[in-house]
Image (cartoon, rainbow, N blue to C red; front, side, top):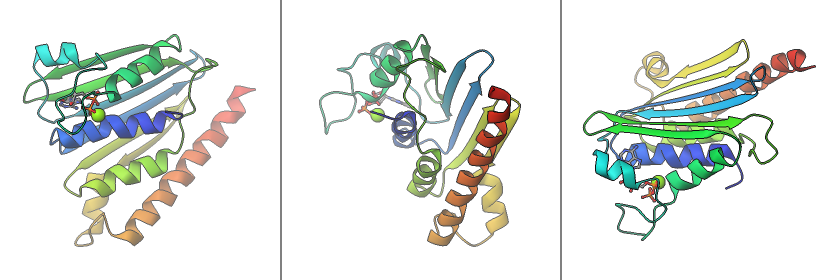
Length: 187
Ligand SMILES: Nc1ncnc2c1ncn2[C@@H]1O[C@H](COP(=O)(O)OP(=O)(O)O)[C@@H](O)[C@H]1O
Ligand SMILES: [Mg+2]
């Protein structure tokens, strides 16, 4: 994969398959410490400790459509090749949390990619899911909580096309503004 957002989508899809209805995605970009952290947490069915030990192995999957599971091992490798680290914790019936850390300026670090499209894809995949997204860049912070948005929308489903287009632009503009503000501190 060429973009971290595609890894995030892949990991969030695991959460959806695990029947999570709460997915939290947090991105922290810390230029001062030169770190980028991505955290994805769900309240899905989780894994027992034996399964958990196997999922970082590229040949493990519980899917029957393909013989190898690659999502988690590939994300782990992406972090580790950037002077980062990768942790996965999970508890049966409670949920799963993945944290991937990267050296922000590492030459091999993939760009974050298109987060607005990624979030829209997750939101559109199932309107029962509540997605909480936070993205910090230095002192700046953007938060998106689909539970709050759904309350505002009332009867109108969050998967309505006009709503999705509005949301995508809203995310895009907010992230753009945040990067513009952050630029001033980077010189
Ligand atoms: N969030 C999660 N909750 C519960 N089980 C998970 C989660 N993420 C991964 N798994 C388990 O780990 C396996 C490997 O995941 P992954 O590496 O993404 O490969 P794949 O999705 O192709 O099976 C999955 O098949 C699933 O059994
Ligand atoms: Mg997967």
